[in-house]
Every structure is written in C-alpha cells, then in structure tokens.
Image 1 (cartoon, rainbow, N blue to C red):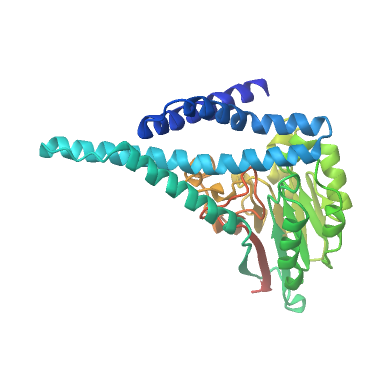
Image 2 (image 1 turned 90 degrees about the vertical axis):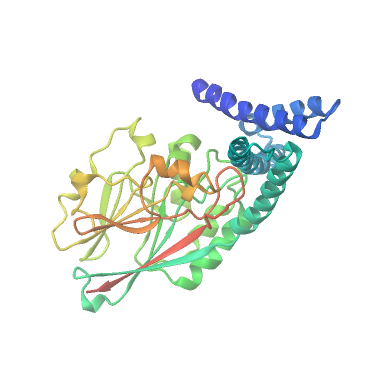
Length: 373
C-alpha cells in the first residue's frame, strides 16, 4: 500500500506541477498566485488520503465534504490535464508547420491554456449531468436451452455502484427507479456494490432488499469490496437481500444456473478454482450465467458458460481514460462473442468511482431477456 501511495503522489502531484506551472507561465501570474496554486495542489493531491484518515476516526460528515471537494477537483483536473496535453501536441504540430513554411504560426500560450480551461470546465459540467442520467441498456438472447414453457426470463444487471460517501441514498433511489418498472426475474450485481469503505451505507441495504426478483438476487465481490473489507462487505450484501456467490454455482431452475467467481483481489488472499473447473460439472443442457467482476474471459471456460456478465472498467468513466482501460482490458463494451457458444456482456457501470462525473460513458442498468430459440 505504501508503494501505491508513493506512485500516486508522484504521478498526481507531478501532473499538478506541470499544469499549474503552465498556467502561471501562460498568464504571467506573480505573487501570491504561485503560492496559492501550490497550496491548492497539496490539498487536492492529499484529499483522497485525508478522506480515508477522517473515515478511520469516525468523522464522516467532514470526510464527505473533503471527498466531494477532492474528487470533483480530480475529475476537472484530469480533463484539464488531458486538454492541456492535446493542445500542447497541436501547438507542436503548428510550430513545425510554421518552421516548414518559414512563418510564425504558433498561437499564444495564454490563448491555448484558456481553451484548455474552458474545455475542462464545460466537460466537467456535462459530466455531472451524464453521471446522473442512468440509461437502460437492453439485450435479447435466444437459446435452445430455454424451454418454450419458460417464456421470457429477464435478468437485470447492476455493476460498480460504489455505494458510500459519494453515492448515497439519492443516487441509489435513481437506480432503483430504473430497476423497479423492469420487473426483473433475476437481479445480479457484478461487483463493487460498495466503495472502498463502509461509511455512508446506513439504510441503503434496506432499499436494495425491497427490490423484488422471483428467481433470486445474486452478487459477486469486486476489488473495492476487498478494500472495504471482505467480511463487512459480505454482511452488507447479505442484508441487501443479495446472495453472495463465492466460487460456487446455484441451479435456480431445471434449465438455468448462476455461477459466481471471486475477483482476483480476493483470490490473492484466498485462491479459488478455475472458472472451467467450477462450471464443468453442470449438465450439458443447462443455461449457465457467469458473474465475474473483471471482464477477462478464461479461454478454458469457453463453452462451459452461456453468458458472462462483468463490469469493472466503467468504460473509462471520464474520456479519454477509456483509452487506458482499453489497454488493460481489450474487450468491447456491451455484448460480444468471445468464442464457442459463450457470450460476454461488459457493463459501463451504474454508479461512479472517485469523481462524481461521467464523460462519454453514461451509467447503465442492463436488461437481458433470455428467450427460447
């Protein structure tokens, strides 16, 4: 953990040093601006760490205030940093073109940084709106394993809700307002139902427990449940009416089974079986739903499951961070066909982690209707 904090401080602090020094240079700011920028940077860089310290000592209201300040800034700053780098690249290309043409084409730095600031501010305001505009994504799958007598089986997936200081009662109610009219037969949570701590959760379990799903409600652990503590996260999940699947398979009808595997963050502490080993014992004619937090497909498991539901990547949450998550998990958002008779659906996530913003990655509640072939 100490190594992670050092890397975080180096990267995030270094980015602040770069952007704020360019602002001072661009607008020729003298005292007291450089000192004010330094103080601002120190507070905002340390805010996420300060939040955890405040939570540890039970200062939840102060922790929530610091979290909102620090994470709103983090979202805005990421957009400003991205815009600044893009504009610097454009300036370099313009300067090169001017050198070839023997003309001075380079725009003033102040104008370039003004554009970056305006773009970041506009994108942040839009991101606040998009984060609260939950979409309902619909998928229909037909399978010979679904008997005609069953008709339609409706699965509703939520993922990466991150309940806690930043995503509370109002945000959860918006999610439930989307779920209730869908009348799910099966409700599943594919990890990170809670954020990296157990604060801000009072009463939220009861709201989730009130959701009706005749075939059951199931969940798997994500990496953030490990950060918050496996046991307290499991207790909250159970009190929310969701059955936690940990390296196990439940047959819920004669033709439908639900399997859940632990996130690698859990497996590092408690090594589990391979997906293929877990699923191999199911009868051939069973439609198997696999819940797995991270969108990685075990090649040996292809053919053993019919549909894997995952999340974790949030589609980057804030563009252009999706370019980085795509490198780590080179999978398509939404429905894809990784091989065999197996399908994969990767959710963009239902809540937010860190910055309460989403830019070009709207949150979703996913509806999967299983129909006979």
